[in-house]
Amino acid sequence: MIIVTDNHTANRFEAHDGETLAGFAAYIRTAELVAFVHTEVDPAYEGRGVGSMLAREGVESVRAEGLRVLAVCPFIAGWLTRHPEYAHLEYRAANKVTD
Image (tube, rainbow, N blue to C red; front, side):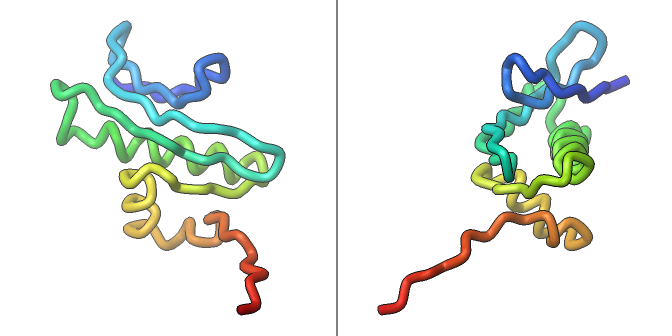
């Protein structure tokens, strides 16, 4: 059974199968957002939904904290695209360029 936890010390959500690290989603946290910068799943666990579990747990955690999500990681960005119910959490910088 895969369990996802937030390892604050390592700045990443981790998916564990018992003692085995099945994958992680690394992040950078600021006062207003959590930037997901890299997601990695052990090849032995690919195709088993581990990446999606990491994405869901990470985004749900951000929502619970009242923060926004900046998806630098292509996997997290793609997951958000497939789950529009979380679109309101996506951080978008206000563009002030005038020329």
